[in-house]
Amino acid sequence: MSGYAWAMPTLNVSTGTLHYRDAGDGEPIVLVHGFPLDGQIWERVAPLLADKCRVITPDLPGFGKSFATGSFTMDSLADVLVELLDQLKIDRATFAGLSMGGYVLQALVRSHPGRVGKLIFVDTRANADDEKGRAGRDAMIALVKEKGTPGVVDQMLPKMLSPATFAAQPDVVARQREIMLACPPATIANACAAMRDRLDFTPLLPTLECPLQVIVGEHDAIAPPEVSRAIVAAAKGARLDVIEAAGHMAPMEQPKAVAEAILSPSPP
Ligand code: MLT
Image (cartoon, rainbow, N blue to C red; front, side, top):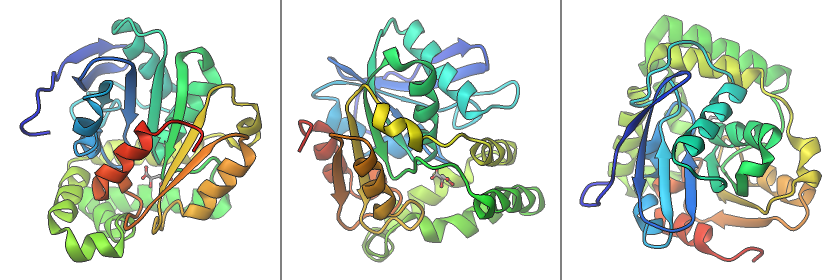
């Protein structure tokens, strides 16, 4: 976000502290990061939105610059987003969540539907982990205990970005690695357990009362486009945007296309 005027306050919240970036005026949009990441993954998209709306990018508790006193679940992370809105005196906002950020928003809309004006899922899933997925979480917890954050980065990074990004955007690859390497091992282990234990959101898709938009990189290897298509099919009236030349990290890889999708009127 260099060259852009960002306020970067830190709030005291029930889980410890909550650091966030805040820029622009108008309708608020809260951009929620995935795993093992922090709010900086939105640094190329947020300036493109801030001319049109107020853009708030928190570091979830335990990630980035937000300190957490204890462990977290998807529900407790969602509750902290409500604390953020309360402290900023925002009644209702648009929320966009990438991957794990989407899981947090699923917990949020379950518990506090009135605080969500519009929901944007980015490179995420609605289903819970199956048995294989849960075993994979346990394996990653073991991996981070044995090899620390670098072991997790080595395993995950090749799957996070599209072939086009690896070939043509070395700066994005380096930045992605840098953000991932900063995630504390204890946060990685906690997030794996929290994602493993999250609830299935699929049955709620047809009952959503707010507008839903789904954005996915065409080469997302972690939450592939067919997963997003199934979400859109289940939630009536949802909008789907497939981002070319992007993988799982569409906002880092193709920020202009992601910002344009977010600013597009719904439905398409
Ligand atoms: C993420 O990008 O947040 C994670 O890959 C989500 C997941 O592992 O389910």
